[in-house]
Image (cartoon, rainbow, N blue to C red; front, side, top):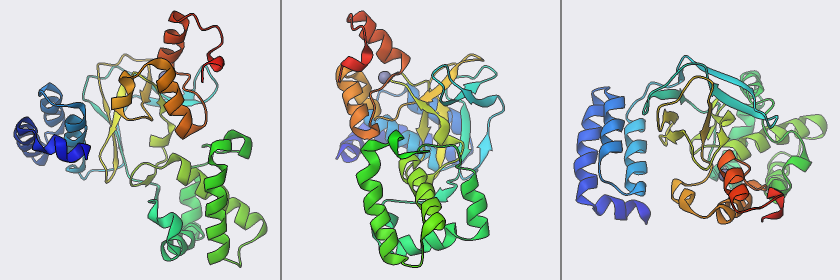
Length: 272
Ligand SMILES: [Zn+2]
């Protein structure tokens, strides 16, 4: 796998040892700066960044200077209200609904998840996910088969559920499934838009940590990439095609639009 190739690189072991020591002392920014400055493959760098992020167990911290507001395209986005430096951590967030793909198909795990979501506390938690995609079926044609299968599993394990309660549960599960990071669905972390030249990135497997990839000025939108960083070197039409395979629509980030204009494409929706 990509990970084991990265681990065989001597630079990986040396850099990892230093970075993990720094992270264990709580010097997490220095750890990430060390990784960023080391001669590593992109896969090795990503793996070490995630390992170091997981070494910090402080969760649910937010940097001052973030605001959620509508973008010029009318969706929600996260914006900086002050300057940030490269490698600043802007967010560490535990999942609002911890979840993994195993919960989808394993009847016992699905039952435990649904039981939790149906409690008063569960309902209060999932209220934090209101407003996220999907808000309606036309928004997610690509995900309908997955959600139909999930609904079949829910009906099989919970024949008592029907009507509005079933509808509401399916809406919440759809939000969780479509917005989840490795450890589950996040409230704030799910609001970052995708860009093919991201200025922030997600690190950490056991919780979601977001770090700046370069210096960022007040007013800029903060964007992650929904695709693997290795794919961001691909040509624009291929990048947009790969994005659509997973998200059901072509990438419309400013970099894609600029590169399409440079190619003389009038209507970006014509290139699939
Ligand atoms: Zn793009």
